[in-house]
Image 1 (tube, one colour):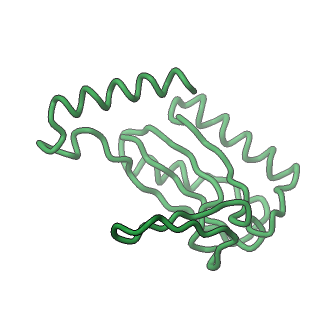
Image 2 (cartoon, rainbow, N blue to C red):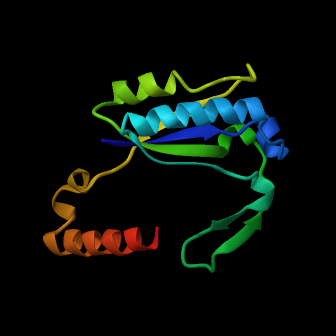
Amino acid sequence: MRFMVIMKANEESESNQMPTTEMLAEMGKFNEELVRAGVMLAGEGLLPSSEGARVRFAGNAEPTVIDGPFAESKELVAGFWILQVKSKEEVIEWVKRVPNTDGAHHEIEIRRIAEAEDFGDNLTPELREAEEKLRAEAAKNA
C-alpha cells in the first residue's frame, strides 16, 4: 500500500520561515531511516502559498486563477512523503516518529493512494494498459 503523508502548514511555514539547521538535520536522519527501511518513495517540502496559485473550475466557465497567499494555513500543505508500507497501522507508526524538534504544534494527515484495483471494473484493461504506459514514460522523466 502506498500512502501520502501530508505535513500541514502553520504560521511559520507560511511566513517563509525556513527550518533551523537542527530541524533539517533531524528530518534528514528520519528520512534516512525511511529510505533504509525501504518505505520512502518520495518526500519534499513546499514553499509557502504566497508563491503558489490555485486554478478554480466552475462548470463550463473558463478556469479562474487565484494567486496566493491563501488564508487558513492549517488547511494548507507544507510538505509530504510518499511511503509504501504493509498497512495503515504501519504508516501511523512511522508518522508518530516524525521529529518535532521545535516543539511546535504540527498536524500530519495520512491518505492512502488509490491503486488500480480500487477502481474495479471502471478501469478497463485498455485504460489500465494506457495508465501503465504513462507511468513508465513519466518514470523516464524523473
